[in-house]
Image 1 (tube, rainbow, N blue to C red):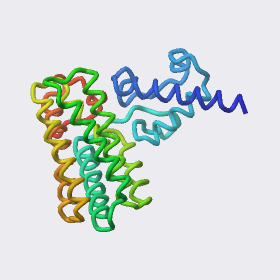
Image 2: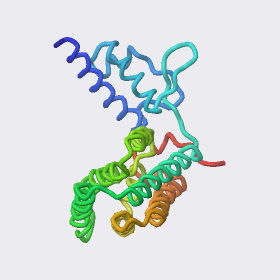
Image 3: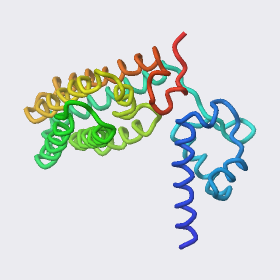
Image 4: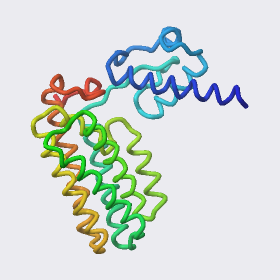
Length: 246
């Protein structure tokens, strides 16, 4: 039992480090990943390395090669845009169902508390690295609560699957804003949309709640286009894996 737990821990460690290497560009896209090199680099055996590679392939960061092994995957701008659009559509459905079915008061209160915490973060005149990181965590938390408000385990599972895909999470392109003068203004717009959708759910306005979440996803589309115009201007992990539209 202890041996199994240690193996699992080593796999998680390898998975996290490999993800970091992929998103930083340390592992070149398209090239076959040498397991022995990773063993030396990460200081773990081949068994957890292989398990970590399989998990990252399931996440969508790696491609399984025809004759065995894995390579870092690249993504077209259209693929990323479609993933964002799909998340917005499913979140819109979650918001509509929450409004139409009647959301649990405890979850509405939880969502409200989360937004109050975001307000406190955005009350600062300028974003620090710490406050920006706090926003990312709270933003993810709010979107998780939104899914739960739907009362649909099917939608909760589907959204969990969607946001685990590269660049599809609610904060996937928030990092594009972090080093720009407009950063705080953009996040305030997003926060306004958060509050509007929570109000629409509480007031049982299903169509409005759905429309607001679709509009909310457009911010991520805007950030994607901005990142593709000037990818070297942003310290956004993984942006080098996205192929710009021809």
